[in-house]
Image 1 (cartoon, rainbow, N blue to C red):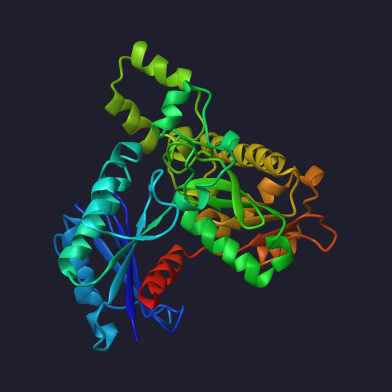
Image 2 (image 1 turned 135 degrees about the horizontal axis):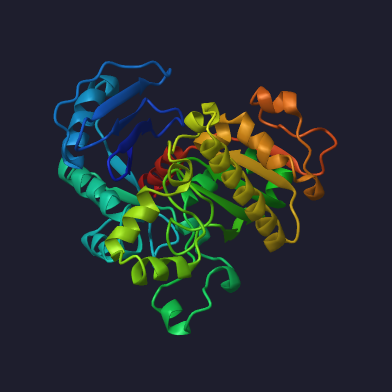
Length: 387
């Protein structure tokens, strides 16, 4: 029996799970948060119960992984980690499927760090830490960009000199592991819808939408970077490039200043001047919080129309991600002005967080499906061992 460890390394976090080759139910799942400051380690067993943990000065991803391995050892019951699967945000033009990480692959992925400066370095740090901890275990990289790599040209390019397209300045799209999982679930539970035109809204601290036709990505709200499209927790979403030029020329901001603003101080946090957490905003009575929510909903509605237009219609809408899965309020707001698309919400179903939240008369089926990126990674790793 093969044991698979999945790692999803963020800038200050490390999400993980352990699977065996004979089950899609993880033995253990967990998260190390706030690496480098006041780190916390949360651990759950396969029944979802919290397990005791210890944290002590987790200042690097290597130290976080060491702490994780110590914490999960009792749950492994003598099993060893045979293979490690990693979420990697950017696969560039090279990778449209999972790949085993060799020195050459790692070198290529390192060259993509300027394309995803706040994600790629930490993904690769997770790989290096796992290679050090498990020198004999294959390391498998699974890419968020892979699901979108065969967009039609018109959804893959920008109207700038063509030479930049050849250099890799393209609309890559992200959250691909999530969209891959949702597509697979639709094939399993709603095959007719899966064969049609579906918009998936991955709404969380990071947020995007994807138009999926017959299981294939047709268009994505995210583009060259993970900044584009919808407003997010701290990221700006769609922004006129002229704003960046203004900030440089008139405000005197450096590239580093602008990057810090657009990635870390914008989005829901910037608009509300309160929080990047939708739960906090929903509970607030401030005008700014209301306006932040209004803008978030408006951009989702606008992009929903665009995604449907890219496919020539819509048969299904799926909500996933932390906000999409848990906020009945946001789902209701998003759908309240979309009757022209054949969307009609059953409010009692929505409030009860049922899987199908549209009415029986709705021409477009609206669903809520919790995503599972770790399982996508685990399945990909298993395929390598099976092969």
